[in-house]
Length: 181
Image (cartoon, rainbow, N blue to C red; front, top):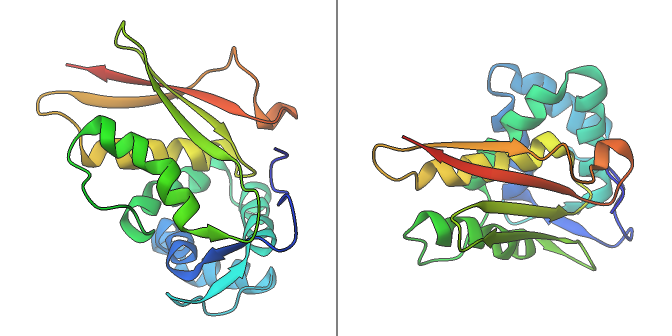
């Protein structure tokens, strides 16, 4: 999917997810609200639905005016704000839940996916086929993984630069999840 471009204009995202945008700009919440409003989302509220394209336009503004680290920070806040399924009790179930949560928090059409793969050799990968920016996706994956990080281990999520990338005009990105002692 093309980065920053909704597949159809009918797709919406729920307000509690949009609020993560504000939380991700923790020290600059007034700027986050201004960027959202400039892109057509004024005073987002839980329970309300907003244009995904307007939200993607706000992400593009962040990418152009603030930078990719802020996109990452916004992504790390998604697990704290978006609706996730019940019963998450392990790192693997947490990572598998991201696609379910993605679909719970969007409506109105095809939105792409977050596909988790855990290989028999222990490697873990995410394939992200959606219109969101790379660093935002990395933040979501890392934010969710850290909530269920095994004791004594450290999670690191790395963009796979050898794979296709939305920043380079491709339709998807791939990430590698590493556990280190």
